Image (cartoon, rainbow, N blue to C red):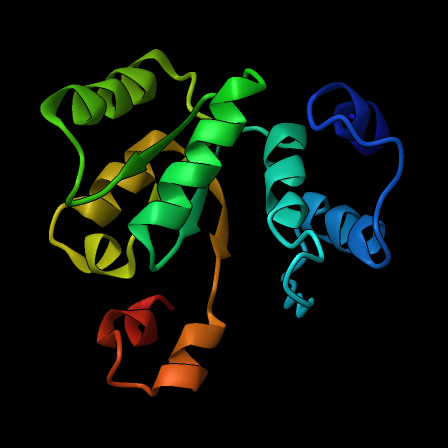
Length: 156
């Protein structure tokens, strides 16, 4: 799939913000990318759009449950199969994640770095077909120190 039709049809934008198109293109082609953009600059689109352009699941490592829930809600409202595995999930929410994985319909899966580090997560992700990993809000490590969320250091 091409970026511009998805940008318009799914996200409702006629054009990219400065820097987004280059980042989306690089991510979609499989390049490793470090994108540093201001708040409100459209960073999330830079991994959400390539997730729709590529096969497999995009894993998004994010530190905040509220942010994950907001992004999942927004994506689901526009028809994108997105879920979050968090400590705040209801049994039904967690079952929806497993069902989407089993049905091979999941496009974006949001998890906290602690969930990523937990036993059993990596084998599950290998079986699920993760093709892209985005580390969202990584500046939290440098702003709040390496001991803020030690599992961020184990992402690699």
